[in-house]
Length: 170
Image (cartoon, rainbow, N blue to C red):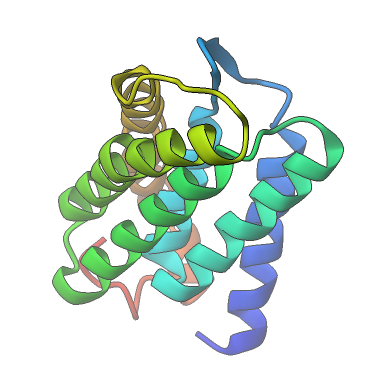
């Protein structure tokens, strides 16, 4: 896919993430945002690991600047997007992209968020206070993304956008 197409799709996904950001589930100190995980998997599968990390960063940045997100959005979304994208790039398996998002956000992102909360937010939150909300949020969003990508494939949208040829295993 040409860089212009990738950049355009990344912009659309960033916009979707920002527009949907008022829809979150409050869980303790975290705002669980399953839409971000849905978008991360779409980006990881359709755009690759580096565009998906850039997209996750931009979405988190805009959400923080507009007051609809917290600093904790950065580690979970970026790590999950990267693992999702890298696993799909090298295996072409949707199940591993799904697991990359869930593990990257639910475990690694939760560890980073806990460290950030302690350093930057003067909040001594328990580590496992982030694992459950981040894990549930990423699990829900990633599961929806699998269904959504299959619908895009069945309707021929991926083929029309020339995305299916590159990602033949979707």
